[in-house]
Length: 160
Ligand code: ROI
Image (cartoon, rainbow, N blue to C red; front, side, top):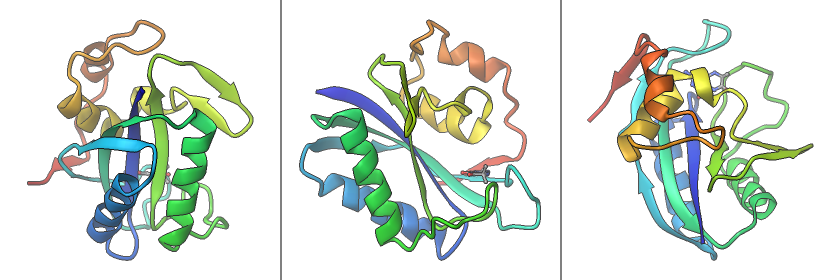
């Protein structure tokens, strides 16, 4: 069993419902168990400012799926929930599901980079991740708390 953290984000088409449906779909997937979600956060968009605020969260799960099998599952869920792959870079999206961490693996594959290449400096990833695993140490031996200390909470709002 691998311990995996997934980043969830949405700023279109009822983001709260998007995240809820994504969690249900993950829970219902063969080979995935023990799905646990952080609190939800509203966050200012990174990228063009003329788009709605995002809803972000991080989920932890246990899986027997290999990393690329899990990526296939996440991309299927994104598409089933109306994601259009033509989504412009940095533009609004119905649902984003990113593999942040897969055990302590470092993966450099054309389709998949783990740890997720931008997670180290994104408040909307680091804060919900810390809600689930405050003591986490990343594969390069960096402590999550060290990253948090360098990452302002600015633009983030924790929801209940
Ligand atoms: N900005 C925020 N706040 N949250 C996201 O999940 C997010 N996802 C993205 C881009 C467009 C980079 N901006 C984001 O893909």
